[in-house]
Length: 357
Image (cartoon, rainbow, N blue to C red; front, side, top):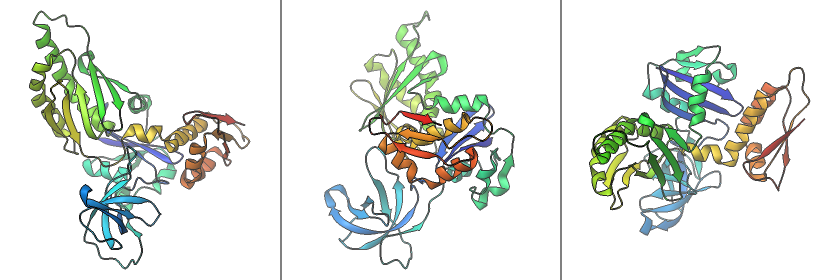
């Protein structure tokens, strides 16, 4: 096993590789932590007994939801158990933690995505090719760091880039299409026409089951969570409950311990996976993610010599997100050789930007 880190301004792409196989993937954005695992002193704003908790305020002015019964006005120690995602704020649970705070305060940061992955593979070296990353590696992991000329070769890059696509090719020619909705993640499986002499239904059931390990790895790599509904390929609804045990077995290697609950009356396979950090598609498609992607592409296209200061023109939300990430902007200036100018473009859609030199 190897943990490989590719750094671009404001973002580390972390790939845990077992030979040529991508086993784990995460994005680490030091300038805008996702808050997962942070410990806070929070103020109770409003009780919500019907929801099993209360709304609270944090030191940065944001709101969250704290489980349990609490009195309005109390200051409570709490742990973030779910980052903001899916249009919902962060979720916390009360903890016992001594502190001297008299107002909402951040008491301690949680583990970074790198620390989370490194803990899963305690013997894996951490390969980096950018000196700027070294200073950001937690002290407890620095003994495992190994310098390499290229952390992400073409193969690793292709595997990681494929995770941004809404489709994935699985074993046996099965194609998975991922469609996020506000309430759940829908996964549709399609497979090639059956040419087996056995009954079509039997053959298709086998094709689905053979693809489940790859599908479960995609769910893990993309960090899909919450309610997940899977529509198997070519199997009649009445025979789909038989697919639940092999799906359950394929999910066993996931550290988040997802559960295959069964099949609905329509034959959709139900999976629930604990929400923790934001799913990959949200990180990539949010204004901050689009801005960081733009920075990475601009660096890749940097002209030789001493280029003039570039100007990134983008939607208001993208510019505002980058303005609040000083780590990304400072890193860009160091790598490119000159500061980046940001220009608001109110008429630009959020997923479009342009570069002016």
